[in-house]
Length: 205
Image (tube, rainbow, N blue to C red; front, side):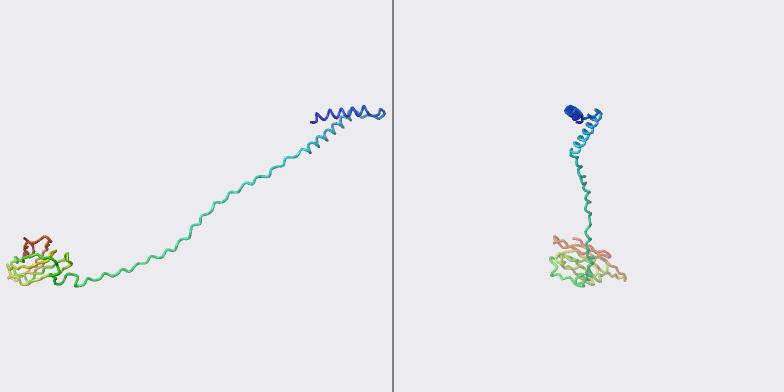
């Protein structure tokens, strides 16, 4: 830009010098050049001042990282203390329920004919036949005494599981006990034999 202005200034200077009065002293060429250069620099400075300066953009705010929410555990529930329940004390079985009583044959259901035979060689001082609780909910005992050696008798017994016990005495004064068990099943109909031995009681057809 300075190169374009400088020739114009020199041309103006020459014209002013040629048109002026002859009697007026003229400026030296060096002075004219200096003046022109000074004016040119003044115009350059004014031109630079007229150019708008770039405005710096404001710094962009960098968002600060948002802190993550902290986890707060919920308060623990107050659970009730476990309470031990007082269990009822087992009831003692009464004498009426432990089968140590005479058997009610009439309410014990169907019966089967049995024949008791003393094959012990002595006298049966006592004989006890005990029915466990059967399908009719009945239990109890039947007993006999003084059954001589070789003695026999017929009895109708309700069906179920039986336990047999006998006390035997002999002529020489000795004694023994005999025991055994048997079952009269629902399908049994024939006569069964209860044979009391010296130490064992068995059932045979």
